[in-house]
Image 1 (cartoon, helix red, strand yellow):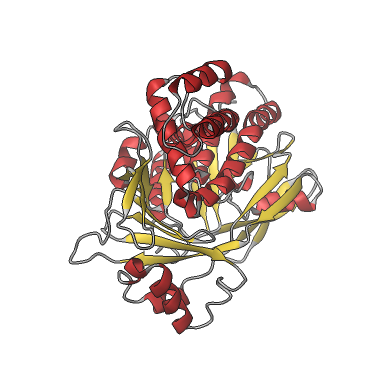
Image 2 (cartoon, rainbow, N blue to C red):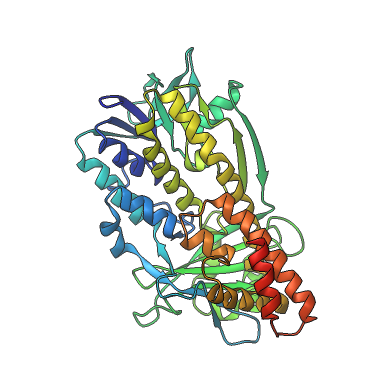
Length: 446
């Protein structure tokens, strides 16, 4: 396919990474983005949901040769710092090894860096303020809008990779033509971001942890930034007695934080102002099938499989898509076969991480408060130490073992949970672990 020109719609995160990978293969890439050039524009406030970079994303960045430039943007987080009511905050480590950490990274800074790296390559042409508004014509073409001049034009779609995010105009256009089926599963919880400023020039919280205030039906989290600030995100039901709909005025917002998150409230001096100014975001999972239209269009990343952010894998899964597509190119001479094999390889994994992300929300907001869960987590860490090549906790498989596909992590995780439940039944709620039974179950089932 050397010498081919390919369109990429969307220059968020996956788009420029994919442009780098393809351009280094000798392909000519035209990268279109509806926004103005983010290298010269301030990021939109209140909609970042700070990103967690883990092993799958790191491996893709390494494949593209940009990881060393990304490293200065990262802050290592070694675990979840739980802020329970009436207790001193305490850390639940993500893993048992020094290298088992995840990294907080700002979306805007990472986006700028990837666009800069793409712009360095002679095979990449960047087009900002170029909005794709859907699919038109026969065969399929891209309906484009130059937002600077107001001009509408059509662009031949063969071949096009859509990396235009969860609200993908390309996916919507394909669905409107009846070329794909789309099913949305909205989450009944929304989110709102808040900025926690430094205190006396230093981070207001422990900087090497993801801070979580679990409150059963809702939660607050906070991730560190390189400038000593934290980005906090409140996740709350959209409607109901305790919901965003119930926070109708400043006094209700302050009352919620004073009651549920008093230590966090003290760190946000302009809480009411931020709450009023920042938008309320929506969350959900989208299932699309198929992901491609012959040899003309392919959906990747959030355009193909938007998920909720509670496993920190949206960006990582999108980056893994880019690496997987790049790895398949040498096996194909035409785009249609490449697109079909990519979808076949990735769709089962996308479905698996979508399921695990929803499940992880329940874990973060409530299960971390359950003594049974904490007991089983301690056993899982012990069993991982005793059987390192067989028993790997599901969270570790997802975050630290990119060689294990998401679908396999889901399958093995279900088996491991069955083992832990059987061990819990044998223990009768006690903390003692039956090591012989554990060995037998692991050897039989894993």
